Image (cartoon, rainbow, N blue to C red; front, side, top):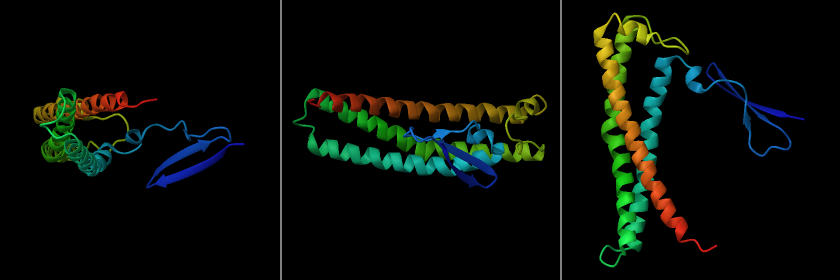
Length: 179
């Protein structure tokens, strides 16, 4: 017998199904959240969530740097430990750049773009965006889309570099395990 748990957020219904034999809840057939919210509402939600996420991940990275530097002082650290400190510092730098530079630029660009889109009556649609159709008639919107895409790509690159650095550090930590 399957049990069901439903969480309703505004007008979105997230249903999670759990069977007696499953440990993890299975998502229902419903699409992802960005496919259920109007694009402007989803972007505003992300504009609030990303700074909180990057603050948390930056704090965790800073704690990791401090702990590793304390346990492995630079003068007595082996070469591999110095590399690890470099990886941790790179992750911290990427996360801080996302928090303090890239995300504010992206949110500002997003709000400017949304203003133009609202003037043309687009952006409140759920699912497929009419933005690409409108860029053919409005070159200013096309320029903003390009700039937003570049800023978004920089944010993704910084996140990937942070992830890669932390993956390298995790590999180092796992090599220290004696199983």
